[in-house]
Amino acid sequence: MSDVQRDPTRTAGNTTRVIEWVKRKAAAIGLTIAVTGAFVAMVSGLGYQAGFWPLFPAFRLLAAGVYGAAGAAIICAVALLINVIKYKTDFVSRSGVAILGLLIGGVVYYVPNSLLISNPPPIHDVTTDFDNPPSFIEVLPLRETTGAKNTHRYKREWKMGDGENARVINVVELQKKHFQDIRPVMFEGKGYQEVFQKALQAAKKQRWTIISVRPELGRIEAFDKTPWFGFYDDVVIRVTEAHGGTRVDIRSNSRIGLGDVGKNAQRIRQYIRDLAGTNSH
Picture 1: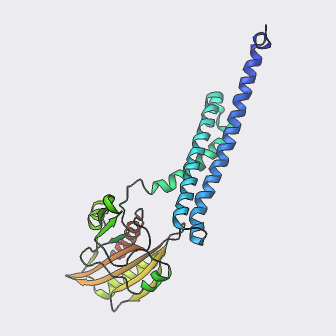
Picture 2: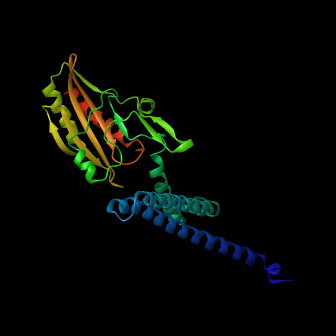
Picture 3: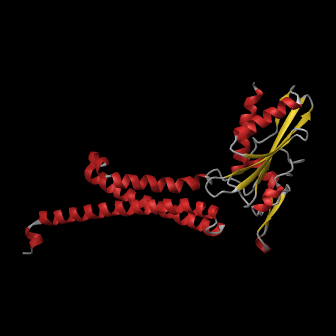
């Protein structure tokens, strides 16, 4: 009779040790991959912003980091499940590494993908006035120095792709469908000078770089820079007299990229909220 047959407890003990080793190593490996994925995802944008690599390699690095972190989260989840089965109510105290890896991997995967959850349209120019969008003027030299790929002129349609796969994107219709709440702000019974100061006050509350304030022309121009990839987006605010009051329009345009994952709309919404708050004062 073999040793295994003579001593079944020894076999059980060996199995337990193997499971423990796999669990411990899996959690450690998962945490290592999750931290590495987080680092790669972070430097993908910072490296592009610093000029170390072009945009598309940066996006590939980002994808590698994000999906690597997702795989790490799965590994740590398996290790955590083993602990739940084995230790039951005592699994938390024995699962610190697995829980940490699961959290890091999950966050790294969620943050970039959360931008796509709302299914933002593939547009990068958002305005409150389709018929007469506010124009960029004094920001134009800055656009040239940063190598802006997109035009500063408002285009109601964009062509995406080439040949048989080409399709026309109707910017106006997409904005109306996805951003129905973005409209001009009306100040009933308010004078032009008062409203212009309110518009400027609201602009100063944003984290923008204001480059032009022209009350005689009713125009404020600024730009915003995203912190991660360092993308530049331009903003122009126009104040005009309207029937019975004063109207404020705003436009936000990205210098590069077909889509903006909803950033320009988000920027305009925040400005409108702050501006509307001044309307009650």
